[in-house]
Amino acid sequence: MDLTSFTEICLHQLKMSGVQKDERLIVLTQGMERLDYADAFMAAGQRLGANMYHMRLPQPLPSSGWAVGTTGLAAMPDAVEALKNCDMLIDCVFLLFSPEQFAIQAAGTRILTAVEPPELLARMLPTQEIREKVEIGGEILSKAKVMRITSPHGTDVTYKLNTYPTVTEYACTDEPGRWDHWPSGFVFTGGDDDGVDGQIVVAPGDILLPQNIYVRDPITYTIEKGFVTDIRGGLDAELVKSYMADFNDPRGMGMSHVGWGMNPHAKWHNFVPGAFGGGMGMEPRSYYGNVMFSTGPNNELGGPNDTHCHLDIPMRGCSLFLDDEPIVIDGDIVVKDMQMDRH
View (cartoon, rainbow, N blue to C red):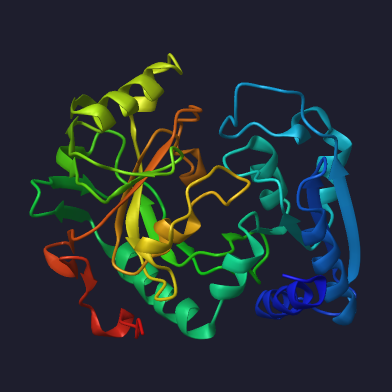
């Protein structure tokens, strides 16, 4: 995608995010990564009369891989202060789960994360319809006390919902202190710390993130009082267990957020494997009718678990009920006010 085209989709994004004349926007990048994103956002913001800045962090030192919640800003308090003093931060690094992001949000800066490939950003532009439907889903979820998820493969798990807020993601942000991720389109919350019980069977075709692979044989999770107590199956189950054990942190077995996807432009079959260079898997997280559960940190929701061990697992063909009312049945959203045309 050439810079002119990229600038146009960034312009659409900034308009959807309510950018006004004279607002202060900072685009955050790191090393040589996503400098074209910075150029496109800077050009788009200038067309709206915003005051645009580019903050470029040094390239990180070689490491064993990405650690959830660890950022180059941790050693740069002056940079964090600058970000706290702007109106909107465009995060092209990925600050989610970090203390620095929480501090920036608490200061009133709204944050948009954009790390997916430009082609995906273009295909999954934020729309007013998706925002409205996701907000309806968020309102329904925020009132529920119990979520139950079932599937033909043997999933039957219950989440008690008395502790954590509901989060909506619709790929743009125009409210102070609010975070969103472009592209996206889903709603989620977290179960009570000791309030998740049952069994989840991850079936062939479901997706492991951040491994970025389609599951080939079933993985069966047993959950008791908010913690995974057993993982069994074949090769994929062994992969998950080995990955989690490598963190040497029992909190990685905690149940994290849970919700469902609502973006009709996201497709289960379009997932392109690869780590951050090819995106981080926002399409499978967002595709219409998926039910996604996560393990590990819940500090994004205000919880105490800040482990670096995190998995997101979007699943196909599940049914999800809130206080016994059907929301998703066999992978299809059945609440009329949330339904969207997928063609």
